[in-house]
Image (cartoon, rainbow, N blue to C red; front, side, top):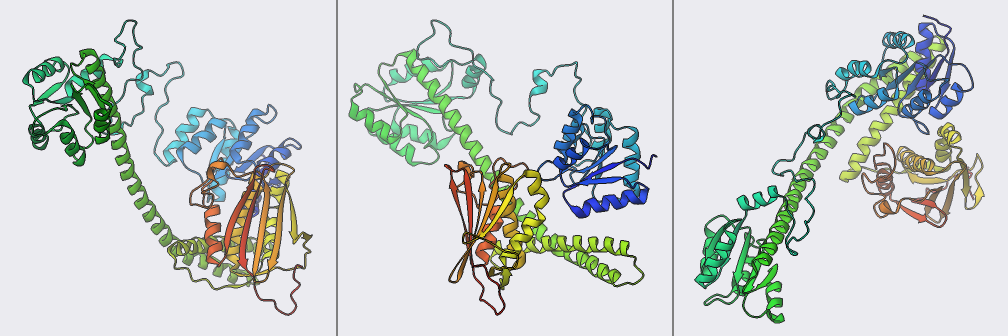
Length: 584
């Protein structure tokens, strides 16, 4: 292997960049340049010679996948070996990277030996065939081996295009209904033969009339298309409905002795079992407005005057049967969605419980890493280089521990069991620390930060104390600043302003870019996000939770006119102490 090769290592975490560089050093490679995101990486690639690229996947400004696509689209860089180092092993993500032309994957965590094996492979074969890459990748990807892709020469048939999953109990619908032919009955619903056949096989109509000749006429008229039941009065109709299968539609005479059609309809609609059956009134009463209104108010769907015109009667029956089927399907789907929602809620509850247990159990090994690191740092036998590596290990362990603690704390906040013990937190210095940590990303995005207190610039020495928890505040303002930075366009400014009034402190962040109208009302709700790749909708939710836990509150104001979003966090101020240099 040529040990004079120049490597580009791209990762937004400084510690990870240094780990990979150390690994390369151990393998004998000394010529290494580094970048914090894809944008910086591309700038290096286009300004100096590089022979191998090792990049993370998830990075701000420009992800590893976006950088990979840009490399393959550039004629001068297209054949560079690109190794994607990632914790992502989902099938669709691997497919995207393979289609974009990745040379190979390295899943975190990894060893020096496994890295060396991958590098040997990609240096010799920087652009593997897509089919071969998928065959190699998918046996190790969540979800199992890949299904063979259809040949490019063989177009997909209609049968191949149909989704494999068909919800149970929901029959497939025809894609299109033939258009109405010239001369067709003006009121008839246009249906294909298959749908008419289903109606004939499935639909049952109950005809209710006290006049035998009328019953015989209606049965004869409808019997060729539907199953028809007949009742010679209201009482008989109700008994039929109580004894067996319910009909799909009822043709109900209005004027009948003992129990008229209005009373029958009233009882039908009062019974949950029969309330949804469409009722069409048949009447020889001349269609007076008062009678029509009375029937419709009782729940009837239509009125037909006797003697009924057969084509019109059939057309209206078809219409209301079709509407009933649509309504029944909507109701079934709604019930199914409710069941699925209940299952998802239970799954989510179980997932949160498992996460809480896992996070709790993680603290012991993390604590062990921190303790062993501390012991090694005190060992005089360690060289300075070794101590630098151990410090990185210790810092990474502390970062993971803070994330685990915060996750557990958020769970307790949701349950209302978090024990909040306020202390003095210098918000001015904490915010400056957050800005400093994001400096490389700010520069890549060409976003500046203006730090003010009551309209005046804050000096390095000035402090602004609130009564809170430092870890919680770091998470709260870290999330808000990250959102503000990602929402801002190039050459925009994020304005941070501190205000103090009596026992309350207000910290405001103003960024360019208005929150989309559709999510403003629910901006601080759980899982609410819009237009943000990889967004979880938990950042602002946790910010609200943390602010309220610290006896504060958070609010948002959007200016469409100026295209800005302002987030305001109100927290209790801490008592002053001797020697404080406070912002004025």
